Length: 78
Image (cartoon, rainbow, N blue to C red; front, side, top):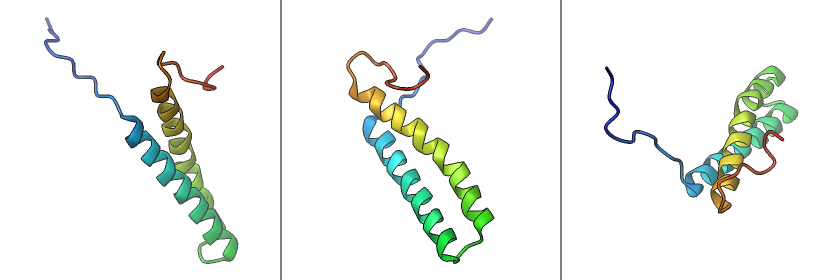
């Protein structure tokens, strides 16, 4: 029998989520600019954006959730 004796859930703070959203947005913009100017291949820029954009959306949703009092995810999923 497995007993759960302590709460192991870790929450991300609003500051951490905002920093992750800002960093992911910066990576997306930088990869797009570098791909359009020809410094990196287009497929590489697209791959970077494909990886970084979901991180941006999820961390932005978490940051917005932490700013509301009821803990609801605004504009996400419905």
